[in-house]
Amino acid sequence: TQPDPARGAAVKAADRAHVFHSWSAQGLIDPLAVAGAEGSYFWDYDGNRYLDFSSQLVNTNIGHQHPKVVAAIQEQAARLCTIAPGFAVDVRSEAARLVAERTPGDLDKIFFTNGGAEAVENAVRMARLHTGRPKVLSAYRSYHGATAAAINLTGDPRRWASDTGSAGVIHFWAPFLYRSPFHAESEEQECERALRHLEDTIAFEGPATIAAILLETVPGTAGIMVPPPGYLPGVRALCDRYGIVLVLDEVMAGFGRTGRWFAADHFGVTPDLLTFAKGVNSGYVPLGGVAISAEIAATFETRPYPGGLTYSGHPLACASAVATIDAMAEEGIVENAARIGEDVLGPGLRELAERHPSVGEVRGLGAFWAVELVRDRATREPLVPYAATGEANAPMAAFTAACKAAGLWPFVNMNRTHAVPPCTVTASEAKEGLAALDEALTVADRYTV
Ligand code: PLP
Image (cartoon, rainbow, N blue to C red; front, side):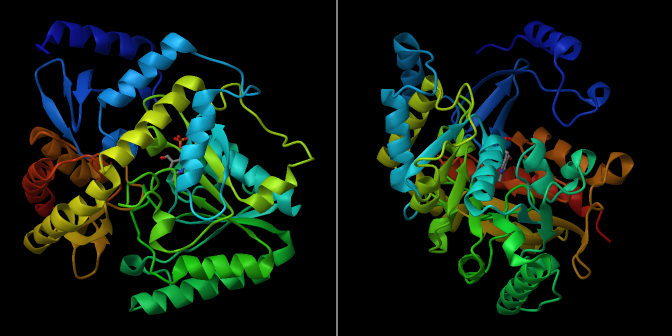
C-alpha cells in the first residue's frame, strides 16, 4: 500500500474525537493509525512498517491476515453470519471438536465466550456451583481479565481501581525464583516453598470454603514465569486432596504460544477447567471459551447451567477458529514456535543479556519470552519502580521509543519487554527483531547504575 499521510491524519482525528480507549487517560494518548498488516508486520499511513514482536495483545499466533482464515470468515459470512447459541450449527460443532481434541485429558465439553475475561467468569461460576463453595484462590503477578470476577482475581495493578475488596478472592504467591517471594536460592526450594505456602493458605482459609484455584499455566503479562517442573503437579495434588477445582487460564499461553498446543502439556497436568481465547483464532473474530472436565460437565447434565451469552459460539468466530486450528496443524505452526524459541529467540536473547547491563534475566519458551530490565544487576532493582507512571517510567518509555525507531513494535509491561512474535515468525524475522532489541537496549543501558 502507498503511504497516505492525509488519510492517516483523518483516521487519527476521528479516533481522538470519538473513540474511548482501554486503560488510558484519554487526553494523554497518541494512538498510531494503522493502515494494514500481513504476517509478522503491520504498517501505518506514513510509510513506517513494524515487526510485530507483541502479536498485538499476544493473540495473533497465526500472524496477520492468514489467507486460509480470511477465506473461512468470508465463506461463513456468505453462508450464515449469525445464529443463536441454542442451535446446533456445523462450524460451532467442528470448532468445539477441534478444541476438545487438543485440550488435555477429559476436557471434552466446550462453552464458548467472546473472549478471555468471560471465560474466566464462567469457569469461576462453574467451579462455585460444582463445589457449592464460595472462594477462589489466585496468584499475585497474574492477569485474568477486566470484568467483575476476573479483575478481582487479577494480581497486578490493573485490579486496584476495580477491586471490590473481596468477591470471594484470596491471593497467594506463585513461584518466581528471580524475585522469590520465599527467599529461595534454587528452583527446587522455590517449588517446595511455594507449594507449602499454598497448602498453608488453603488450611487457614478453610478447605471447605474454597471452590477453585485459578492459575495461568505460564503467567503471561505478569512476566512469563515458567513454573518449576514440580509446581503444577503439586497444585493438582493439593486440589485433589481438598476437593478444589483446578482452573488453568491458558488465554495467553494456549494455542501454540509455548511451543505446545497448551502450556499444561509441558507439565503433564490436566486441570478441571481450562480457559482459552486469543490464539484459538488469533483474534480475527472475538472468541474465547472454557474447556470442561467430564465430572464438572456432569453437574450440569440435568441441572441447568445458569450462564449464557448472545454470541456464545458465534458462527464467524467459530469458522475462524476451525480454519486457524486446521492451518496451525497443517503448517506445523506450533512446532515452529517451539523451534524458534529453542534455536533463535532463547539463544539470541541470552546473548543480548551478556552484552547489555540493563538485562537482569531472560526467561521463556516457544514464542513466549520475557526480558527483565534492571537498574542494577547485582541488586536486581527494576529499571522502573513497580506500577511506575509519568516521569518515573521514563526509562521504559525511552526504551519503547527506541524499539519503534528501530522498526520493532514491542510488548512492554512495567520493567519488562516480552518477545512474543506470532508463532509463524521466521528465523530471519526473529533475528531482525533481536537486532532491533539490541539497538533499543543500548538506550536502556544508559539508565543502569
Ligand atoms: N487471562 C489471561 C491469561 C490473559 O492474558 C487475558 C488477556 O490478556 C485475559 C484472561 C483476558 O482476556 P480478554 O482480554 O479477552 O477478556
